[in-house]
Image (cartoon, rainbow, N blue to C red; front, side, top):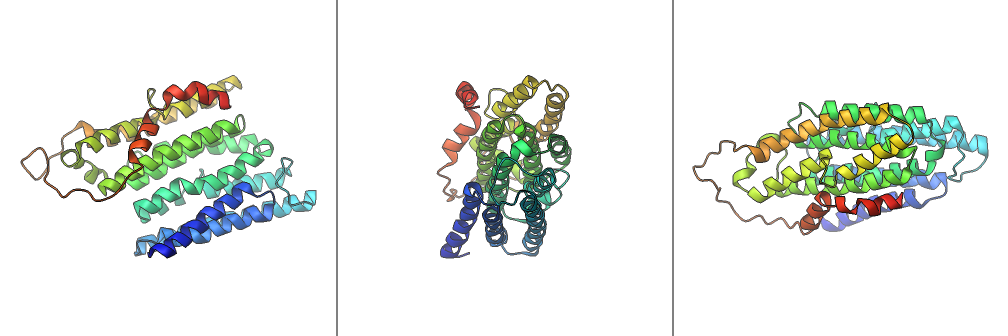
Length: 347
């Protein structure tokens, strides 16, 4: 894709999300979603092949259905309240329809089926945008309507998402599918806390975006899309191999790393609200995610897979990909734990 065209399309995607985040009129919110959807399609099909075409079609159909549901919720709310303002007092029926529409847009279970399929069919750079930037707009609307959302509906979707995000990724070997299931699980954690502390959801989203961004950038740097190709990195880039180990542990939410912050604070917040079963279930299903991250770590950094050359290091051309943001991102996705007291004040 030519740079001027890519710039125009990317700026439309960004503008769409910004309109959704800043609009106080429901029609503008809907228009923002539509702008974003129509501009992201060419980005998904950047490397044109039948798989990308299929992925973009699936994405378009699910998102268009979600937009239709959202518009239906907006109209029901309009008929009951007589106004278009994005306000805290939504009609219960409208609230359920909007929540369902936003769940489809986010890929929350039971509307998660499109996420692994679409992510697998597109390139790593498009997958990066799909699993990070595309989550911001729906979550910002959920944040705004959080006081009126039906708690049972939201918590049921949260638990299902975390469970499916754990189970679905267990026997995957494709890295993009693993990242997609990881995304479903993280969305589950975010919606679980939405009712009790929306600010905590924003913290979780920020850390999730930083970690996913770093993981995708490392995979793009190595040009790896399967566990098999990742297992060959030990004799090409040993440093990156050990960094992937750290990142996977952080994504799994192990204590000394950044990924532990949102899990710790969400479990703490839920127990403060006298919920025992919910955080217990969340923590137990997080172990499933940790298992498949551990499997990736094992194949990448903890074993020396046979390579076709006799030397320990492989002779290769210098990598020309410029990843200037990688060092600060790696630091942020692994070493933010000491900032937890400051972050807990934000809530």
